[in-house]
Image 1: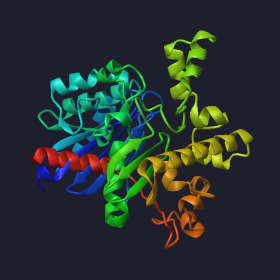
Image 2: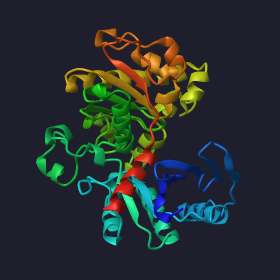
Image 3: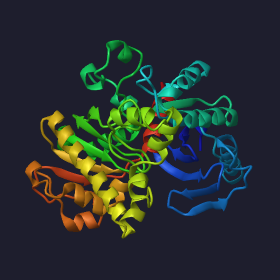
Length: 391
């Protein structure tokens, strides 16, 4: 088997590094090391789901992204010596105004991406750590950056601007949108499932620990609930979502909180976890009898319903609603609550299909088709990487 048939995809998060190995379009290995720096654990599965690796790592093995990638590379060299990836594709959260398409990474690109850290301080540094580790582990192999913001590029200025003096927009203070790799994959998958619906007016709800929604017209992004940062829009696992900026002024002026304290509050102590005081995990909230857990779920649902209406208004109508992401794909409760009493918009659920997490959740003949589609950001990265290195 030739090297050119294999592509390695890395998705480096704050405390994890996900890996997937592709042979042409087929995923042949998938796994991750999570708990970096605290309780690192390595898991890996083959295409059929069989466990290939499942072990706790030593503190030195799981200390950082560099050491974690070494564990993955050593396993591949030992267990799959015939595999030498032709290229490595990376998820990078922020491409800024500069990057609207995947790009081959060189020193200049890496320096530019480092300059975007202030725009995504809790994501970009870890993405770049993964890239640097991969460049050291695979010297001479092409490294490709694929951006979560790229799919949303091309919006007219009126969509992406804030009502601030224009020089702020020129300096990069604008709406970027995120989860673009997920939305791009869903747009393509919906075109396979229901091509007529995919060419129409679609709202996609990517619901997980990070959550956002996107309006698609003809398969292209029209607007996203996330804006300048990954804090905006829907409440998330530990992130606040949209908040009145007056609250932040109050916290600074009356409570004496500085930028670091506010960042910690908004990124780590808010959202489902902050509201419930129970957990950031939707499964734990659904299993809890605590009224605060129910409040967190209801607030999450309320915000989703509000954004469905707003995005539908922007689109001028709705042909399909798609749920994806960890919560969107697996929580029948959240989907049912979101769609309840939405008949005025043409949305209805088949209760049995929803309980079974079926592909199509709406009854035949419904004005709006509702789907549950599993996303695959790593596959999207692999496609972009293969296309770029082939040119």
